[in-house]
Image (cartoon, rainbow, N blue to C red; front, side, top):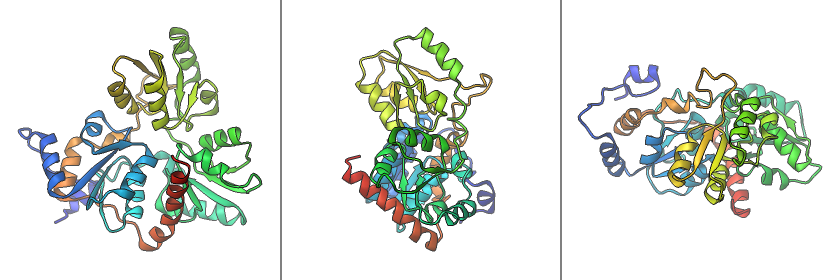
Length: 330
């Protein structure tokens, strides 16, 4: 039975005994329910450690598409749960907390984006994965930061393209491909916050440290980068590099996996403009906890639902992304 209180709060708020071993109990529930736990790199370390699979948005979508589990628990933000549900309509898709939204997805309301698309007939619409299913439903192909450049380049050079919602990623792709895509004016509240001046100061302290930057960052930060790439690309670079120190300009959750894979290396989070806040942490990602994950599996709530007509349209650009990515070996 789903309680009204859970619906109002957006998560199962039932007491969890301090006497139980949460990780063991989550593991038992996962096996009982034939469930897999998928976690994004920006989740808290303890959630990443208990997950069956940890990855970036592309990897999570690829994993959801191929698993034979009956239940998917998506530890990330709301649009990731929606994407998994659209790809796997017959599976139960759970998220620990429905309040775990995304500032970038919120910056692109579906009705306004649909109107914008309507005002530009003849344009191919490319949407970043950080969007609602309703935005994906008016999209021709979805991209992630891992495959955006290659997918844009798979279209003819004179193709008229709308790219949304991240203006920073769009500007970066325009700059490296020579395209002139029309950009929706959206952004991620975390990646907008990194301070150019403070990164420059860090470089003085660590002159040999490569600066690893996510393409959702502002152009001025991207210009300081030794590598611009997705979370998966940033992680791969750090693992393969012979450098000891790294300055990392993306959400600080990735540092957990970096330190796990490279315990002998030093990863320095790039500071935000406002040194009084933890602005390099996504407050939405941090809403998910082990307690909420346990309750979510136990009570199988909250479950993600996507309206059938939206899901039917949204699945096409997601499948197109997965097909192009597979063809390109991404």
